[in-house]
Amino acid sequence: MNEATDTANLAGTSAPYRPAAGPLALGAVCLGFFMVLMDSSALNVALPRIRSDFAGGLAQLEWTVNAYTIAMAACLLGGGTLADLLGARRLFRVSLLLFVLSSAACALSPDVGALIAARAVQGVSAGGLLPASLALMAHMYAEPARRARAFTVWGGVSSLALVLGPVLGGALTAAVGWRSIFLINVPIGLAVVVVCGRAVAASPARRVPFDVSGQLAAIALVGCGIGALVEGGTRGWAAPVTIALLAGTAVAGVALVAVERAVAHPMLPPTLLTRPGFLAGLGVGALFQFGAYGSQYAISAFLQKSWGLDALGAGLAFIPFASFWTFASFVLARAVTRTGPRLLLIAGSALAALGALALLPVGTGRDWWVFGLGSCLLGLGAGLMGPSLPTVVLRALPVHQSGLASGALNALRQVGGAVGLALFGPLLDRSSDAGGLRVCLSLVACGFLVIVLVVRRTMPARS
Image 1 (cartoon, rainbow, N blue to C red):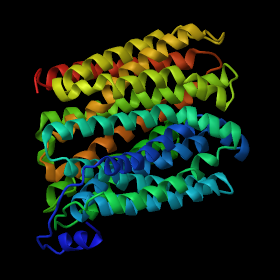
Image 2 (image 1 turned 180 degrees about the vertical axis):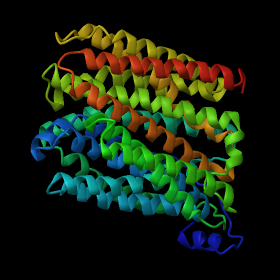
Image 3 (image 1 turned 60 degrees about the vertical axis):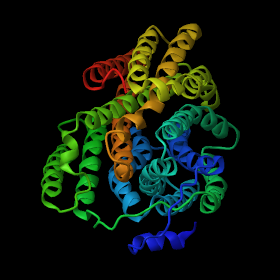
Image 4 (image 1 turned 135 degrees about the vertical axis):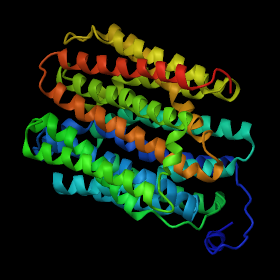
C-alpha cells in the first residue's frame, strides 16, 4: 500500500484496504507516539537548568511546558477527526515530520520566547500524531482479541514513555545539556517516517467536512482555561490577565457548545456526550494524567529544590517508580484482554492513591526508604491503569470513529496534566520545605480515589 491508496480513498473510490499488523508496523506506530509522550516528561527534570540558562521566572518556565500541552490538547479533537477524514497513516507521517522540525527548532532556540513558540508547534504536531497512532491500531487489528492485545501494547508503551522520560531526560541534561532532549527526536523521527511508509498500510478515509469553527472554539477554550490556571497561580486570581482569561474560557465554552449543536458534521457530536461509558473514560483519563503526570512534576521539582539533587540524580531517583510502572504495564496489565479494564482501573487507582499517601511523610532529610516505598506503589498503580484507558473509550464508539475517540481521550488527558502542572507549580515554588509537596500529593491521592468511585458506578463488572 502507498500514498496513492490514500488519494483513492479521499476521492471516494473503492481502493482495497488490507490491514498491516506485522511487528514492524506496530513498532513504528508505537515508537512515534513514544517520542511525543517522552518529550514532555523528559523536560520536567530539565526545567531548573532551562530556568538558569535563560534566567526566566516561574511563569515562563511553566509556559515552556504548557505551550506544548495546550497546543496538543486543543488540537487533539481536531486531529482525531482528521485521522478519520484523511486517513490515519497520512496524518501520522505528516505530523511526525512537523514534530521533527519543531524539535530541531526547540534545540536551537536562542531565548525562552523562541523555545515557547517552538514548543507550541511541537504540541500542534503531537495533536495530530497521537490520535492518528491509535486510529491506525484500530484499523490494523480487526479481530477483537488481537486489537485488545495491541491496545495493551500501545498503553504500555505510552506508560513507558512517561516513566522513562525523567530518567533519560536527567541523563541527557547532565551529560550533554537540555537541548539534547529535543535533538534526539530528529534522527529517530525521520527513521519512523520511513518505516511507517513501508510497513504500515494506508487506512480508509471518510469524506466529511472538517469542523473548522469547532476546532477554533476548542483551541480558545483549552488555551484560555489552562492559561487562567497558570496566570492565576503566579499573578493572582484578581489580576487583569487572569480575569480576562477566565472570561475568555466562559465565552469559548459557550461558543463550542453552540457551534457543535449547529453544524452538520460537528468535531465532537453532542450525542456522544450522552454515552456514560464514553464520558467516564474521558473523566478517568483526565484524572489519571492529573495524578500520574502531576506527581512526576511535583516530585522532580522537590528532589532538585529541597534535596539538592541535580537533573541526573532526580532522573535516577525515578528508577523504582519507572520499574514498577513498566512491569505493571507490560506484564500485569495483559489481563485486560481477559477480564476487561474495570478491575485493573480500580486496583490501579487504589494502589496509586496509597502510593501518594505513603509519600506524605517525606521531608527534607532524604528519607529514601519512604520515598522508595511510595514511588513503587504509585508506579505500580499507574502502570496497571495506563493500558486500560484506550480500551474504555474505544469500545464505546464504532471503529470508524476511533480517531475521534483517541483524540477526545488524549485531549482530556493533556488537560488533566496541564491542570496538575498549573496547580502544583505555585504550591512548590512558594514552599521552602515539604509542605507544598504534601499538598500536591494529597490532591493526587484524591484524584485517584475519585477514579475508583467513577469506575465502580459507570463500568460493568464483566466485559
